[in-house]
Length: 399
Image (cartoon, rainbow, N blue to C red; front, top):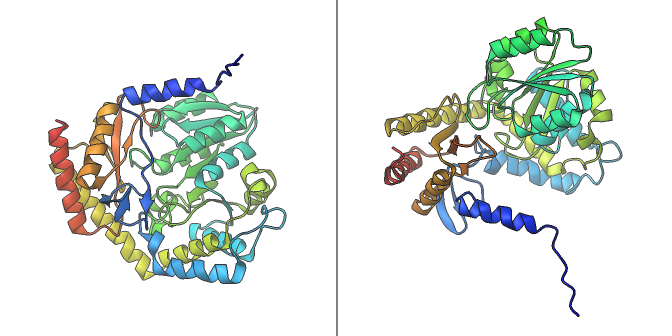
């Protein structure tokens, strides 16, 4: 007699089939070779408008040299978590360099920007505390807030008056209070009203925290982020950034007071339970920050912004809506999820790679393509991409 064994994960098949039926299912595109402005995905050469590699540093010769040298002197891995035997001199030098760059007392590096956000919020707050959070904050902030078990109150996107309303309603909250926002919002490319939020934090005795993932290496002097760009030095208690986007490597960091960083050494779970960065990654990041502080870094930033303005002007002229973006993040609004994914597929077939973004990353009915411009795109590539986007968009009756 044959016994049939049921599959308790069979419901996943049904959910994937539902995504397929709605035109929302995707398969990972595989990059063959380097992350460059024109790259090979799945064996096809395309204009790459999908990467967070804002300054083109993933292939920069100075970063390559630093990685190779670190492997020669320090090997390929840290070999342990940072609190046991995995803290290398390279890690400490990188953290000191980032703290100087951001104008803070100290810094700690995490394995990703996600763990930097989630680990920090969960470490510094508890169930008796309060969080005031922008409704479009990154998923890593949302997860960190949930993990903290603090009470969470969400204010309307970039709505200072709504945030102030919540501050007044909770003015006598007995626990600690955190006001947290993205510096640049990853799906829309707009910039937080940081100075106004800092004023509220000061008035209502809140910890002020900003996630500068998409502004690190993009905004401010030498890419120092929104705190520098909006002249908020000394007003933000916790600055989070990433090493995975403009910096060109991998990881995240938290900057603030020496006491904050010392506390995170003791209580931030991703730091406590993850192996330290490979030496090559730490050295690569050092080389990136050195470059940002040089004339070559300034040239890359200027090229990034020149390319951004050119590309966005062309899209608007063609009739596309790029929303409220103020940065190289360029949303091309579509609305319907299935149509956005079809738009992306047709663009890829025509030689332009821009992924579609739908629910749950963005709300239902607000699907879009998210194009990312870099400093290393050639003007001709951007012109060609805009022509293809316009042609395909017309064929789908999007413009």
